[in-house]
Length: 256
Ligand SMILES: Nc1nc2c(ncn2[C@@H]2O[C@H](COP(=O)(O)OP(=O)(O)OP(=O)(O)O)[C@@H](O)[C@H]2O)c(=O)[nH]1
Image (cartoon, rainbow, N blue to C red):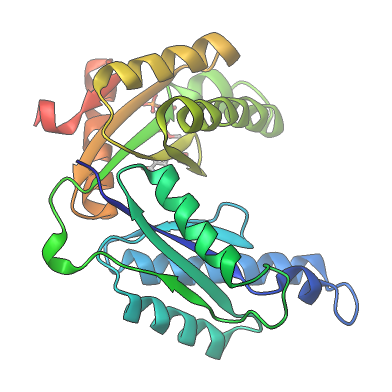
């Protein structure tokens, strides 16, 4: 049974900061946001977690294995090195969507994202080490079949981007509302999805849905693990099996 620990990362009072005392140069904001994401990804990644940039002012991480003390250390380190601070909401659930909703509610209860008195809040609970299991996380790694041949080498870079984003938009909505899962674009033609306990038929249904709706063909490898890294790594290996065998869906625990 999955037990996903999700952390919502919110930059405190960021909207007002971007325009105070005057609007700040956009390239500087983009540089700061991407460096902050890189730091959070490295911090969480070094502890076996995954972080996703999402909207940059709000980022979402899978943090099984990260204690509340470590979350506080991330806040302190960012607060010391950046012109902004972070608030963090942490929650766990068998459904990743429910866990994120709970983490979000905890931050919302502490104050608005644009409340200048809400700074460096840390709300919620982490899973205690003794309660972690080898199938706490299920991760699906989707990619567009032959994106290079069908899009990258055929269309201009912007038209390729539109096709890939269409596939992502349809997949993220479908996985959210039909399968209680959180999907994140991670670059190229790849989408990583944090799932509850889904089965091969669910993934086959999802790829068929996206093909039917927006004519983008996907393949998917799925893994399970104690941490996001372990589950995600297995998912990558399963995706390699899709590529080698020409299959649409591979579950690592069934092919291994
Ligand atoms: N984030 C991330 N991006 C990847 C990964 N593998 C590939 N990519 C990205 O996806 C792009 C396309 O690579 P592939 O998916 O291997 O190429 P493809 O043409 O779709 O070929 P097939 O996947 O074999 O059908 C690359 O340029 C990378 O940007 C991965 O594991 N993680």
